[in-house]
Image (cartoon, rainbow, N blue to C red):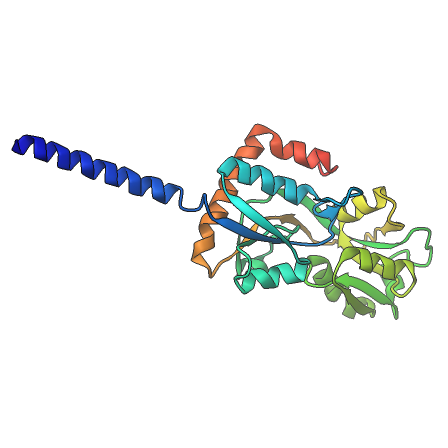
Length: 259
């Protein structure tokens, strides 16, 4: 009888241990994570002709979530507001064409890059022959999108080329300011500008060989000071690795002309 009790106790202990382990592994499966993103940053996130919110960032996130089995809710806030939501713990993560930089690594933990062919370019109104290089910006106003690497690059050039900066919350408004002549030019990530030009946004890229614009990679970010969301980052990283191996990642980039 004692042997039976001992066997039962051991079996019960094993069941409890397995239940706890299962609970631990599924701890984040039922939680719905809040992921903040930009409003318009085509082809990474934008509203299509049908009124659907689409883009490479959204497709990559969906593929990763499906691979890892977690749920999420997208918050379309604009880039600056998305970062603010992350820092105030109103969002668990950000996917918004966010460049991985040393400065940002002080605050955020990033996944491996999900896109790494980015560089910043200057763009002007299509057909405008008045701006041929950075030196032609002297005394003029240049448009920049708040909080972006394009804005930081613009700020680094302003003292050297003696121009003023006008800030905007989103790319389309920034482009319109250039096309109406209020700003002479703007600085934007190449894949975003190239996609916009292919869709007829009325802009053109101007290269100046005298400067070497910075290049960067895009990553999924969580707040470094929030330990709870490091598990979300680990799941995103694992899912990203898997969809790269399966070819799904390359398929998404091809869909939006990014490979």
